[in-house]
Length: 105
Image (cartoon, rainbow, N blue to C red; front, side, top):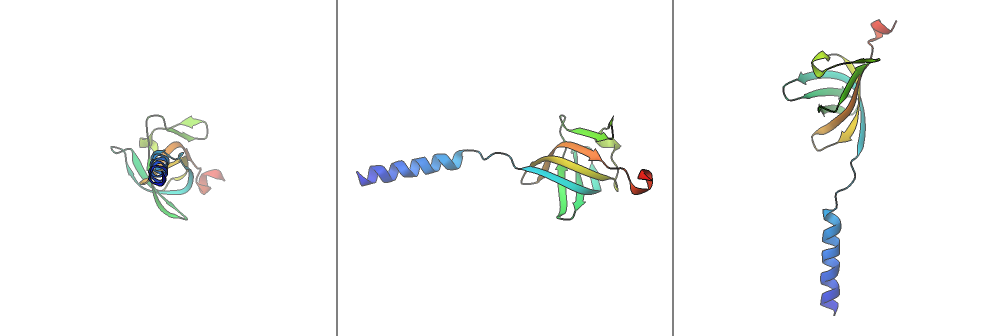
């Protein structure tokens, strides 16, 4: 009986490990240091270090009310990225291009 209980517990625990954890949300703000339009990625330098951002077809990229494309972003642009953390960085849901200080004045 003890072996059956132990085996059952092992299967239950193994099943719990297979359950996918919910996605972890992420917000990153910083300066774009590189862009790869073909791979649909860019790197943002933040206070936490460099983060690779993956852009998908559903990703919204905006500057104010204006909708942009990935190709509109440039190295040096300040952005705020919201999305989900991944092993490689962040899968972006939204990218907001921030106005440069000289443009804001």
